[in-house]
Length: 124
Image (cartoon, rainbow, N blue to C red):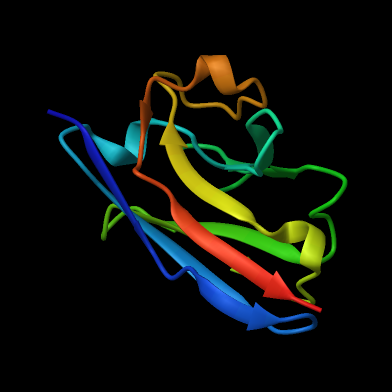
């Protein structure tokens, strides 16, 4: 059984930083790409950041470029999302997810297992 467990969300002020973590079990973590996606009320789930299976390649939504950094530790089966200069529009439930391939996917439908989500709220 594949499980993804996120942590690190919370309530912060605009301009603050947060680091999200996601630990994966039940799949050979080092073989697969990972992503962080988010969903705000009334909006579709959207891609935020992705990282390939070896951590060599990353990709970001335009809204995240220059502010967010995705990384992974294959020895710990963990993926991270470091978020800086947070804005109120970053408020959302953030999900980590895994794809059944080694390269980055931006389409949420490509991800086959998801975490439960962690709330990030940024106040102005």
